Length: 275
Image (cartoon, rainbow, N blue to C red; front, side, top):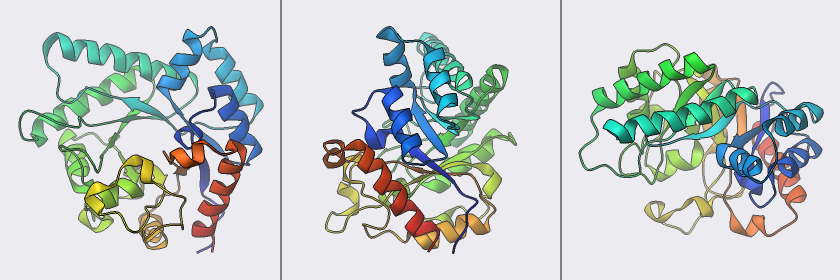
């Protein structure tokens, strides 16, 4: 299944303890094509005395693209003043994404809601977010979270995107969330490659019941039980050629040499995609 056209990306949660400029250096030294940044990291750097221009310069110096930034929250289930504050915060985060040249910013669903998921209402809210993003220059991509009680399956996320009735609506794929939420790519058979914003890539270990898995349990691709080659083949057949972003939250790896963590991670991803 060799294919050299993938964009190999490092999601910086994989090397979380490093500061943002170090994360950029590590991704470059490990020979990734791209890096997926978090708004909270950028904000923390700026609040500690740095500037957004420092980040932009570092990305340019190291030749890294930013396919996506993470993340926008509280946009789906808030009302009134709380919703206006959520949109103001979304705008600030979108502006950071634009500054680093990202075409997409991840939009997460709420972990819990007081009422059942209303697909039409969620679609309206997502369409509102897309319209705001277009004004600013970046497109929000809807993520499903396998451990959420609201949008935890790929078919739920894709249905919300379709209800938004916006051709620029997209879904974030994540191998962990597919498995954790109990869905597969077959549950969204009409989801084509151009409606996938980014593909978060990881594996899950054996021995832990699916319903008990947490983000911290994620392991390197190929070190777990997921049918990653099968899933990549399906996504590829549907026309996706975007970034494959290694996204781990493994605390054991955070305690190791982060340069080695990144280097080994790229080797593991390539072993799945190119062999």
